[in-house]
Image (cartoon, rainbow, N blue to C red; front, side, top):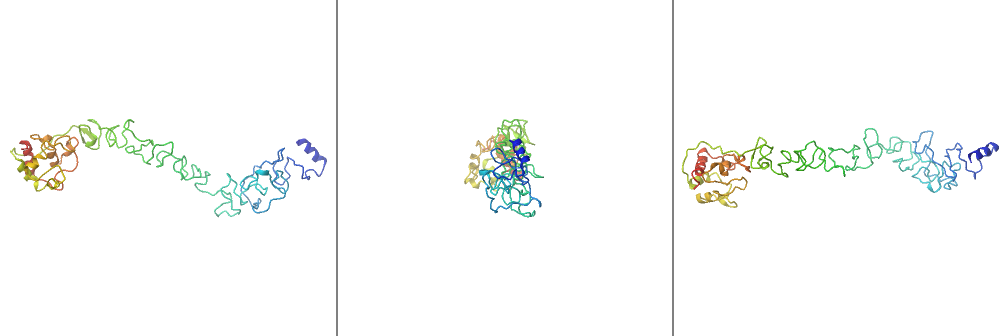
Length: 355
């Protein structure tokens, strides 16, 4: 077909002037090559930014006669027939899409304001700079054209990574943006468990202690007594319970009434028994509310008659409550300190049988 057309052109000077003949060679008017069906192929210059020697076409000018019939004829630059579109490579005016024609070429241009002003909202390459325009530009690691913080490209045009503080959907379980394993999200962006073989998730030691895992054994790490199993926490290690270290008191037989009198003036936190299991209104109530009564915190009774090392009351009075398994909280009495004589009265009351 090509050989036949060329031969006819050489034989006749009017070759190519007949509007009914469609050649597959350009005529110097920007017309692209045509197929045997008469449709033209867009040239490689589609979407090239406009220059002073390549003025923009008018998006409001009426199309040439015959535009849209699928045959490219002068003064048409292109004609794709029904495929002509103002957001495609060949416009409804049968001109090739170019930056500056006032029409936005879908997938190639982000804007097109139809002028050559570089400093306005749409520059002369029809692609406004900045993160979020869908084009990766210098200084950007990625640009997916959205502001989602849950996909592979953040709204800041940085690639998602573990530790950026945003949970990459389907990839990360968590991401708290820090390098601390001892919280609810590890540095590998997975949630800690009590069987992952790592001291994390508020665990003082590997898979033990803290608010979620079982208690730690002797010799393992701890943050407080609550982390230890039948042990106490000293210097962040679970160690055996420690005996009471009382002052040097002279042995004496002390009654419950005398013990109550020793603390009655200082111990007002229990309100003389109102709203509490401890009743301090007199000697008998003082004795009955503590002797043989289990502590709500420690693993020993509040008072164990004859045994100062198993009487939690004495540990609290001497501010040694953390020496007892499960012990903790403030010393007693709150806000006040008993004299050594008062302390010895209560200690000897317990030692002499807590009667």
